[in-house]
Image 1 (tube, rainbow, N blue to C red):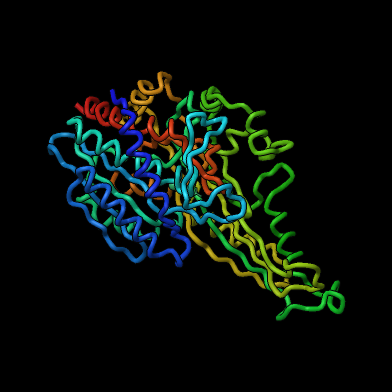
Image 2 (cartoon, rainbow, N blue to C red):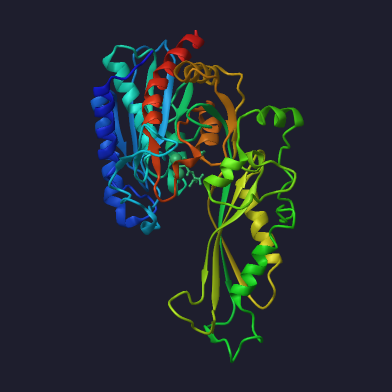
Length: 459
Ligand code: BES
Ligand code: MN
Ligand code: MN
């Protein structure tokens, strides 16, 4: 069993702090140099840890970092996937400390301290656990099987170039299981293993009315206001039970049976605490489902951003020429993200009045993923968490998306084990993102057990 020493903990943490200082924001081309710098940093860390065949493979976007340690062709091979890119830190003024100047602070949930920085949990901190666990196994002569690392820099913008890389390197990526820490668990006293991810269809719409902005007194009441129309159209996408009204949207949704729902309901979830943690007066969602179900086994539709017209200081009386919105749909098995995108587009055009023009763009997407628990990958993870936490982990479906996971299964024919160590309260994608030091160290201690359990179960 791995027990990190105080000096190992200090060293690993200091290295992570340096890594988190690199603003590797893949969505913003102004940070291209820094994203590439993060790739180099990962390659150097893998080299230092003892990996071989290190490559920084260029793509049409950001590079994929590869490294491996093959100790015996007769032993199983684990492929570790993670990402070194991060979300933009905006809105900057809501951060208590700068997003790329990591600081350690305690919180009620993280009394041992947490590291605050963009990417601390998603995914630099969690990915770095794997490099350090590998380094620890190398140094202590405890590496029990072969390992390959594939770390990308475009996860937060849809992994556009990863699919082609995986298809073109099938032989090089050959493995028995894929291991990923880019999800969450229930709490620090109740670990869980992610058995599902939702899919995603990300759309953008533009509604255009008059050919120019108009005086709202001269023209008001007589022409279509694109913002009024757009908001009416969006409002129609959900009914009064919060069901999505797009025809065909639910047709392929696999309904989870009562038995499985009861099994899922056994995972601890405190609704009061949930409501309090985000300062809400009440919850909201699709009728007939619990909060946990709404955020895991049910599809959703959300407006991510909406703009148009005058939003500056003071008042300006205007009918804007156009209005825009970004709309995402989270999907569950067996919805197909491209088909859902088409259903959305067709419906959105159909509900538009003749007085406006509608444009619909599909951004990116990915398929949902569910994995059974009767395989040795899951069992190896289960045993690993049970020994480091002293508590049996629950299987749990997560609400987020990692589009490459279903593609791994399709292209490589290999299952992914989602060993996440983050918490929902870690504020990923939000201001003040953080990652508990307890979680960081526990991750590094749990990963080597996955390796040894998986090797033993493969025999
Ligand atoms: N690591 C997250 C996904 C995640 C987080 C899954 C927590 C489960 C629990 C990943 O980096 C992410 O943010 N994915 C995006 C999708 C992507 C196509 C931009 C997402 O879920 O919005
Ligand atoms: Mn991530
Ligand atoms: Mn993310």
